[in-house]
Image (cartoon, rainbow, N blue to C red):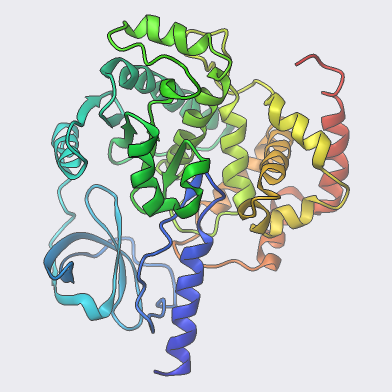
Length: 409
Protein backbone atom coordinates (compact mmCIF):
# COMPACT_ATOMS: atom_id res chain seq x y z
CA UNK A 1 0.00 0.00 0.00
CA UNK A 2 1.47 3.35 -0.99
CA UNK A 3 2.08 6.17 1.48
CA UNK A 4 -0.17 8.38 -0.65
CA UNK A 5 -3.12 6.05 -0.21
CA UNK A 6 -2.42 5.57 3.48
CA UNK A 7 -2.49 9.34 4.03
CA UNK A 8 -5.73 9.56 2.06
CA UNK A 9 -7.29 6.86 4.19
CA UNK A 10 -6.26 8.59 7.39
CA UNK A 11 -7.59 11.90 6.11
CA UNK A 12 -10.98 10.47 5.20
CA UNK A 13 -11.29 8.51 8.42
CA UNK A 14 -10.33 11.48 10.57
CA UNK A 15 -12.72 13.73 8.66
CA UNK A 16 -15.60 11.36 9.35
CA UNK A 17 -14.71 11.12 13.02
CA UNK A 18 -14.45 14.90 13.34
CA UNK A 19 -17.97 15.47 12.05
CA UNK A 20 -19.61 14.48 15.38
CA UNK A 21 -20.79 17.90 16.68
CA UNK A 22 -20.62 17.27 20.44
CA UNK A 23 -23.04 14.95 22.21
CA UNK A 24 -26.22 16.02 20.45
CA UNK A 25 -25.13 16.00 16.82
CA UNK A 26 -23.46 12.64 16.21
CA UNK A 27 -21.98 10.95 13.20
CA UNK A 28 -21.80 7.16 13.17
CA UNK A 29 -18.09 6.66 13.72
CA UNK A 30 -17.75 2.93 13.00
CA UNK A 31 -18.30 3.32 9.27
CA UNK A 32 -15.69 0.81 8.12
CA UNK A 33 -13.95 3.13 5.66
CA UNK A 34 -11.68 1.05 3.50
CA UNK A 35 -8.01 1.23 4.30
CA UNK A 36 -6.35 3.05 1.46
CA UNK A 37 -9.36 5.13 0.43
CA UNK A 38 -8.35 8.62 -0.60
CA UNK A 39 -10.84 11.39 -1.22
CA UNK A 40 -10.65 12.54 -4.81
CA UNK A 41 -9.14 16.01 -4.98
CA UNK A 42 -9.89 18.73 -7.48
CA UNK A 43 -12.59 21.30 -8.28
CA UNK A 44 -16.14 21.06 -6.91
CA UNK A 45 -18.34 18.42 -8.56
CA UNK A 46 -20.31 19.26 -11.70
CA UNK A 47 -23.84 20.62 -11.18
CA UNK A 48 -25.44 17.47 -12.61
CA UNK A 49 -24.91 14.73 -9.98
CA UNK A 50 -24.09 11.15 -10.88
CA UNK A 51 -26.62 8.53 -9.85
CA UNK A 52 -25.66 4.88 -9.72
CA UNK A 53 -26.95 1.46 -8.80
CA UNK A 54 -24.23 -0.28 -6.81
CA UNK A 55 -24.17 -3.95 -5.82
CA UNK A 56 -22.19 -4.53 -2.65
CA UNK A 57 -21.32 -7.46 -0.40
CA UNK A 58 -22.83 -7.01 3.05
CA UNK A 59 -23.71 -9.36 5.92
CA UNK A 60 -22.63 -12.41 3.98
CA UNK A 61 -24.83 -11.60 0.99
CA UNK A 62 -25.24 -9.13 -1.83
CA UNK A 63 -27.27 -5.93 -1.58
CA UNK A 64 -28.06 -3.15 -4.01
CA UNK A 65 -27.83 0.51 -3.13
CA UNK A 66 -29.10 3.26 -5.43
CA UNK A 67 -28.44 6.94 -5.12
CA UNK A 68 -26.36 10.02 -5.78
CA UNK A 69 -22.59 9.90 -5.47
CA UNK A 70 -21.56 12.62 -3.01
CA UNK A 71 -17.83 11.86 -2.86
CA UNK A 72 -15.78 9.26 -4.70
CA UNK A 73 -12.40 8.13 -3.40
CA UNK A 74 -9.36 7.63 -5.59
CA UNK A 75 -9.54 3.83 -5.21
CA UNK A 76 -13.28 3.55 -5.99
CA UNK A 77 -14.73 3.81 -2.52
CA UNK A 78 -17.61 6.25 -2.30
CA UNK A 79 -20.06 8.17 -0.17
CA UNK A 80 -23.50 7.64 -1.71
CA UNK A 81 -26.81 9.28 -0.79
CA UNK A 82 -29.91 7.15 -1.32
CA UNK A 83 -33.34 8.52 -2.20
CA UNK A 84 -34.30 8.69 1.50
CA UNK A 85 -31.23 10.94 2.01
CA UNK A 86 -29.31 8.37 4.00
CA UNK A 87 -25.55 8.36 3.47
CA UNK A 88 -23.83 5.05 2.68
CA UNK A 89 -20.07 4.56 2.86
CA UNK A 90 -19.14 1.86 0.35
CA UNK A 91 -15.72 0.26 0.60
CA UNK A 92 -14.05 -0.53 -2.72
CA UNK A 93 -13.47 -4.15 -1.73
CA UNK A 94 -17.20 -4.64 -1.11
CA UNK A 95 -18.36 -3.24 -4.48
CA UNK A 96 -19.41 -6.00 -6.88
CA UNK A 97 -20.75 -3.88 -9.74
CA UNK A 98 -21.73 -0.32 -10.64
CA UNK A 99 -24.34 0.89 -13.10
CA UNK A 100 -25.08 4.46 -14.09
CA UNK A 101 -28.74 5.48 -13.67
CA UNK A 102 -30.27 7.99 -16.06
CA UNK A 103 -31.65 10.87 -14.02
CA UNK A 104 -32.23 11.00 -10.30
CA UNK A 105 -33.56 8.10 -8.25
CA UNK A 106 -37.29 8.65 -7.73
CA UNK A 107 -38.21 9.76 -4.23
CA UNK A 108 -40.87 7.92 -2.23
CA UNK A 109 -44.11 9.46 -1.11
CA UNK A 110 -44.18 10.37 2.59
CA UNK A 111 -46.55 7.51 3.32
CA UNK A 112 -44.45 4.96 1.41
CA UNK A 113 -41.33 6.28 3.13
CA UNK A 114 -42.99 5.85 6.51
CA UNK A 115 -44.09 2.30 5.71
CA UNK A 116 -40.61 1.32 4.63
CA UNK A 117 -39.04 2.90 7.71
CA UNK A 118 -41.26 1.12 10.20
CA UNK A 119 -40.48 -2.15 8.41
CA UNK A 120 -36.83 -1.54 9.36
CA UNK A 121 -37.68 -0.73 12.99
CA UNK A 122 -38.71 -3.13 15.78
CA UNK A 123 -42.27 -4.41 15.81
CA UNK A 124 -44.95 -2.07 17.09
CA UNK A 125 -44.01 1.14 15.29
CA UNK A 126 -46.56 3.32 13.50
CA UNK A 127 -46.34 6.50 11.40
CA UNK A 128 -47.63 10.00 11.98
CA UNK A 129 -47.40 12.34 8.99
CA UNK A 130 -47.35 16.11 9.21
CA UNK A 131 -46.83 18.67 6.46
CA UNK A 132 -43.05 18.40 6.58
CA UNK A 133 -42.28 15.39 8.81
CA UNK A 134 -42.52 11.63 8.85
CA UNK A 135 -42.62 10.60 12.52
CA UNK A 136 -42.14 6.92 13.29
CA UNK A 137 -43.20 6.02 16.84
CA UNK A 138 -44.13 3.17 19.13
CA UNK A 139 -45.42 5.34 21.96
CA UNK A 140 -48.83 7.00 22.09
CA UNK A 141 -50.10 8.75 18.98
CA UNK A 142 -50.94 11.77 21.12
CA UNK A 143 -47.29 12.15 22.09
CA UNK A 144 -46.24 11.80 18.44
CA UNK A 145 -48.79 14.48 17.49
CA UNK A 146 -47.53 16.82 20.19
CA UNK A 147 -43.96 16.38 18.94
CA UNK A 148 -45.13 16.89 15.36
CA UNK A 149 -46.82 20.18 16.19
CA UNK A 150 -43.64 21.33 17.96
CA UNK A 151 -41.52 20.44 14.93
CA UNK A 152 -43.87 22.19 12.51
CA UNK A 153 -43.76 25.34 14.62
CA UNK A 154 -39.97 25.20 14.48
CA UNK A 155 -40.03 24.58 10.71
CA UNK A 156 -42.03 27.74 10.08
CA UNK A 157 -40.16 29.88 12.59
CA UNK A 158 -36.72 28.78 11.40
CA UNK A 159 -37.53 29.51 7.77
CA UNK A 160 -39.21 32.84 8.45
CA UNK A 161 -36.42 34.09 10.69
CA UNK A 162 -33.58 33.37 8.28
CA UNK A 163 -35.44 34.58 5.19
CA UNK A 164 -36.21 37.87 6.92
CA UNK A 165 -32.54 38.07 7.89
CA UNK A 166 -31.55 37.72 4.22
CA UNK A 167 -30.63 34.03 3.99
CA UNK A 168 -32.80 32.46 1.30
CA UNK A 169 -33.24 28.90 2.47
CA UNK A 170 -34.27 25.94 0.35
CA UNK A 171 -37.23 23.77 1.18
CA UNK A 172 -36.00 20.31 2.20
CA UNK A 173 -36.21 17.93 -0.73
CA UNK A 174 -37.80 15.18 1.36
CA UNK A 175 -39.91 15.01 4.52
CA UNK A 176 -37.76 15.17 7.63
CA UNK A 177 -37.65 11.88 9.52
CA UNK A 178 -37.98 11.57 13.30
CA UNK A 179 -37.96 8.27 15.21
CA UNK A 180 -39.51 8.27 18.69
CA UNK A 181 -39.17 5.21 20.91
CA UNK A 182 -41.57 4.40 23.71
CA UNK A 183 -38.91 4.23 26.39
CA UNK A 184 -35.25 4.86 27.08
CA UNK A 185 -34.23 1.21 26.84
CA UNK A 186 -35.44 0.81 23.26
CA UNK A 187 -33.96 4.19 22.31
CA UNK A 188 -30.53 3.33 23.70
CA UNK A 189 -30.44 0.09 21.71
CA UNK A 190 -30.44 2.26 18.56
CA UNK A 191 -28.45 5.18 19.96
CA UNK A 192 -25.50 3.10 21.09
CA UNK A 193 -24.84 2.16 17.44
CA UNK A 194 -24.76 5.82 16.45
CA UNK A 195 -23.30 7.65 19.44
CA UNK A 196 -21.51 4.93 21.37
CA UNK A 197 -20.95 5.48 25.07
CA UNK A 198 -22.76 8.83 24.95
CA UNK A 199 -26.10 7.02 24.48
CA UNK A 200 -26.84 6.90 28.21
CA UNK A 201 -26.19 10.63 28.65
CA UNK A 202 -28.39 12.14 25.94
CA UNK A 203 -32.13 11.98 25.35
CA UNK A 204 -32.06 12.76 21.63
CA UNK A 205 -29.70 13.35 18.74
CA UNK A 206 -29.50 14.16 15.04
CA UNK A 207 -27.52 11.67 12.95
CA UNK A 208 -25.67 13.15 9.98
CA UNK A 209 -25.45 9.79 8.20
CA UNK A 210 -29.12 8.76 8.42
CA UNK A 211 -30.34 12.39 8.39
CA UNK A 212 -32.79 11.50 11.17
CA UNK A 213 -33.60 12.70 14.65
CA UNK A 214 -34.00 10.00 17.27
CA UNK A 215 -35.51 10.39 20.74
CA UNK A 216 -37.88 8.61 23.09
CA UNK A 217 -41.11 9.40 24.88
CA UNK A 218 -39.76 11.98 27.29
CA UNK A 219 -42.96 11.94 29.33
CA UNK A 220 -41.76 8.64 30.77
CA UNK A 221 -38.68 10.16 32.45
CA UNK A 222 -38.17 11.27 36.04
CA UNK A 223 -41.53 9.91 37.22
CA UNK A 224 -43.64 11.91 34.78
CA UNK A 225 -46.80 9.86 34.06
CA UNK A 226 -47.19 8.50 30.56
CA UNK A 227 -50.83 9.65 30.45
CA UNK A 228 -51.88 6.94 28.01
CA UNK A 229 -55.30 7.62 26.59
CA UNK A 230 -55.17 11.31 27.42
CA UNK A 231 -56.05 13.84 24.77
CA UNK A 232 -53.28 15.77 23.03
CA UNK A 233 -54.28 18.93 24.89
CA UNK A 234 -54.25 17.24 28.28
CA UNK A 235 -50.93 15.59 27.47
CA UNK A 236 -49.39 18.93 26.49
CA UNK A 237 -50.64 20.57 29.69
CA UNK A 238 -49.29 17.71 31.76
CA UNK A 239 -45.88 17.85 30.09
CA UNK A 240 -45.53 21.60 30.43
CA UNK A 241 -46.61 21.62 34.07
CA UNK A 242 -43.67 19.47 35.14
CA UNK A 243 -40.27 20.81 36.30
CA UNK A 244 -38.63 18.75 33.55
CA UNK A 245 -40.62 20.48 30.83
CA UNK A 246 -38.01 23.06 29.88
CA UNK A 247 -35.39 20.37 29.29
CA UNK A 248 -37.79 18.19 27.31
CA UNK A 249 -38.75 20.98 24.93
CA UNK A 250 -35.16 22.19 24.59
CA UNK A 251 -33.91 18.73 23.62
CA UNK A 252 -36.49 18.23 20.87
CA UNK A 253 -36.07 21.74 19.44
CA UNK A 254 -32.27 21.55 19.63
CA UNK A 255 -32.00 18.35 17.61
CA UNK A 256 -34.71 19.35 15.15
CA UNK A 257 -32.88 22.65 14.58
CA UNK A 258 -29.76 20.72 13.59
CA UNK A 259 -31.85 18.71 11.16
CA UNK A 260 -33.37 21.86 9.67
CA UNK A 261 -29.99 23.57 9.22
CA UNK A 262 -28.56 20.55 7.39
CA UNK A 263 -31.56 20.18 5.08
CA UNK A 264 -32.39 23.71 4.00
CA UNK A 265 -29.11 24.77 2.37
CA UNK A 266 -27.58 26.40 5.45
CA UNK A 267 -25.08 23.58 6.09
CA UNK A 268 -24.03 20.58 4.03
CA UNK A 269 -23.75 17.30 5.84
CA UNK A 270 -20.14 16.24 6.54
CA UNK A 271 -18.86 19.66 5.46
CA UNK A 272 -16.36 21.41 7.78
CA UNK A 273 -18.89 23.54 9.66
CA UNK A 274 -17.35 24.87 12.89
CA UNK A 275 -19.06 23.22 15.82
CA UNK A 276 -19.64 26.54 17.55
CA UNK A 277 -21.76 27.64 14.57
CA UNK A 278 -23.92 24.52 14.45
CA UNK A 279 -24.36 24.26 18.21
CA UNK A 280 -24.70 28.01 18.60
CA UNK A 281 -27.69 28.16 16.26
CA UNK A 282 -29.29 25.12 17.94
CA UNK A 283 -28.86 26.60 21.43
CA UNK A 284 -30.30 29.95 20.35
CA UNK A 285 -33.41 28.26 18.98
CA UNK A 286 -33.80 25.70 21.79
CA UNK A 287 -34.84 28.16 24.52
CA UNK A 288 -38.34 27.12 25.66
CA UNK A 289 -41.29 29.32 26.57
CA UNK A 290 -43.55 27.33 28.87
CA UNK A 291 -46.18 30.07 28.86
CA UNK A 292 -47.28 28.92 25.39
CA UNK A 293 -49.45 25.89 24.64
CA UNK A 294 -46.60 24.11 22.82
CA UNK A 295 -43.85 25.04 25.27
CA UNK A 296 -41.88 26.94 22.64
CA UNK A 297 -42.65 30.31 21.12
CA UNK A 298 -39.68 30.74 18.81
CA UNK A 299 -36.47 32.68 18.67
CA UNK A 300 -36.05 35.80 20.78
CA UNK A 301 -35.95 34.34 24.29
CA UNK A 302 -32.67 34.55 26.21
CA UNK A 303 -31.43 31.04 26.96
CA UNK A 304 -31.03 31.58 30.67
CA UNK A 305 -29.30 28.27 31.56
CA UNK A 306 -26.71 28.85 28.81
CA UNK A 307 -26.24 32.46 29.90
CA UNK A 308 -25.70 31.48 33.54
CA UNK A 309 -23.20 28.81 32.53
CA UNK A 310 -21.38 31.27 30.28
CA UNK A 311 -21.05 33.79 33.09
CA UNK A 312 -19.73 31.13 35.46
CA UNK A 313 -17.26 29.46 33.11
CA UNK A 314 -16.04 31.86 30.43
CA UNK A 315 -12.59 33.39 30.89
CA UNK A 316 -10.79 36.04 28.80
CA UNK A 317 -9.02 34.35 25.92
CA UNK A 318 -11.48 31.44 25.70
CA UNK A 319 -13.20 32.61 22.52
CA UNK A 320 -10.52 31.98 19.90
CA UNK A 321 -9.85 28.31 20.82
CA UNK A 322 -13.61 27.74 21.02
CA UNK A 323 -14.00 29.04 17.46
CA UNK A 324 -10.95 27.43 15.88
CA UNK A 325 -10.86 24.02 17.57
CA UNK A 326 -13.82 21.68 18.14
CA UNK A 327 -12.19 19.56 20.86
CA UNK A 328 -13.91 21.36 23.73
CA UNK A 329 -17.30 20.21 22.46
CA UNK A 330 -16.25 16.55 22.49
CA UNK A 331 -14.71 16.37 25.95
CA UNK A 332 -17.05 15.59 28.83
CA UNK A 333 -15.36 18.04 31.20
CA UNK A 334 -15.57 21.01 28.82
CA UNK A 335 -18.57 20.34 26.57
CA UNK A 336 -21.22 22.09 28.69
CA UNK A 337 -19.04 25.21 28.92
CA UNK A 338 -18.38 25.06 25.18
CA UNK A 339 -22.10 24.92 24.40
CA UNK A 340 -22.65 27.95 26.61
CA UNK A 341 -19.88 29.81 24.81
CA UNK A 342 -21.34 28.87 21.42
CA UNK A 343 -24.76 30.16 22.52
CA UNK A 344 -23.33 33.45 23.79
CA UNK A 345 -21.28 34.14 20.66
CA UNK A 346 -24.11 33.23 18.29
CA UNK A 347 -26.68 35.24 20.26
CA UNK A 348 -24.35 38.23 20.27
CA UNK A 349 -23.69 38.05 16.52
CA UNK A 350 -27.37 37.57 15.68
CA UNK A 351 -28.34 40.57 17.81
CA UNK A 352 -25.55 42.98 16.86
CA UNK A 353 -24.14 41.79 13.50
CA UNK A 354 -26.98 39.92 11.85
CA UNK A 355 -26.15 40.83 8.23
CA UNK A 356 -22.50 39.91 8.69
CA UNK A 357 -23.49 36.66 10.38
CA UNK A 358 -25.77 35.80 7.47
CA UNK A 359 -22.93 36.43 5.02
CA UNK A 360 -20.71 34.20 7.14
CA UNK A 361 -23.30 31.41 7.08
CA UNK A 362 -23.67 31.81 3.33
CA UNK A 363 -19.92 31.34 2.89
CA UNK A 364 -20.01 28.21 5.07
CA UNK A 365 -22.90 26.81 3.03
CA UNK A 366 -20.55 26.42 0.05
CA UNK A 367 -18.21 24.06 1.93
CA UNK A 368 -18.12 20.58 0.39
CA UNK A 369 -18.74 17.28 2.19
CA UNK A 370 -15.58 15.63 3.56
CA UNK A 371 -13.46 18.68 2.82
CA UNK A 372 -11.31 20.00 5.66
CA UNK A 373 -10.52 23.46 6.99
CA UNK A 374 -7.44 24.38 9.01
CA UNK A 375 -7.51 26.70 12.00
CA UNK A 376 -6.02 29.34 9.72
CA UNK A 377 -8.83 28.94 7.21
CA UNK A 378 -11.45 29.20 9.92
CA UNK A 379 -9.84 32.40 11.13
CA UNK A 380 -9.75 33.83 7.61
CA UNK A 381 -13.41 32.97 7.05
CA UNK A 382 -14.43 34.66 10.29
CA UNK A 383 -12.39 37.83 9.90
CA UNK A 384 -13.45 38.18 6.26
CA UNK A 385 -17.11 38.15 7.33
CA UNK A 386 -16.91 40.32 10.44
CA UNK A 387 -13.84 42.50 9.87
CA UNK A 388 -12.66 41.82 13.41
CA UNK A 389 -10.46 39.25 15.09
CA UNK A 390 -11.83 36.86 17.72
CA UNK A 391 -10.03 38.89 20.41
CA UNK A 392 -11.79 42.06 19.30
CA UNK A 393 -15.15 40.28 19.14
CA UNK A 394 -14.57 38.78 22.58
CA UNK A 395 -14.23 42.18 24.22
CA UNK A 396 -17.54 43.35 22.73
CA UNK A 397 -19.19 40.01 23.54
CA UNK A 398 -18.36 40.28 27.24
CA UNK A 399 -19.74 43.82 27.41
CA UNK A 400 -22.93 42.72 25.66
CA UNK A 401 -23.47 39.72 27.95
CA UNK A 402 -22.96 41.90 31.03
CA UNK A 403 -26.25 43.63 30.12
CA UNK A 404 -28.17 40.49 31.10
CA UNK A 405 -26.64 39.96 34.53
CA UNK A 406 -29.12 42.24 36.26
CA UNK A 407 -32.18 40.78 34.57
CA UNK A 408 -34.44 38.39 36.37
CA UNK A 409 -34.51 34.80 35.07
